Length: 155
Image (tube, rainbow, N blue to C red; front, side, top):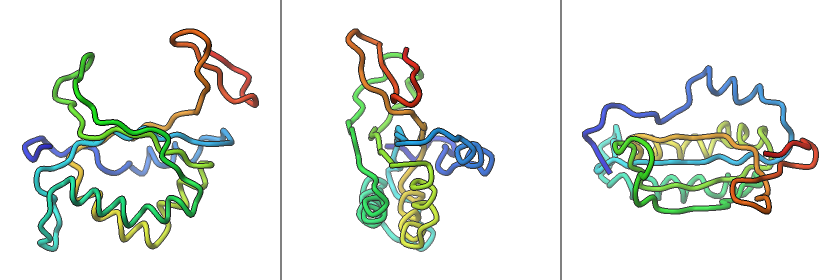
């Protein structure tokens, strides 16, 4: 957790959100979330909470919208050490959320209950990364994977 870092990445830009919407692949979308919390949540109304507490409020209030739209959390972990990469990018929480489609993710962001809940995320988070990913099945060997049958590509 931190409060000393310069303003981090908290919300998508209009340009990045437009790029997200323009992606035409059908099927599930995985979103890798990397989060660094503020020591003290930055509520504009004077609410007192830690960043972690504020994020729990966000999760509690946005969770029903996420579930109603078919979302599910497929993996979660607490990062322990940045072995490769900038040390200053230490994260408090990492998880992968799955949405049934791009439209489901967009519908969540537009939902009135979600819009009320997002104030907690904005107060909680000092910095974050949100990375859209295509789900894949692990291959037989380390580093191999195969993507959806419709895509027919593999690495």
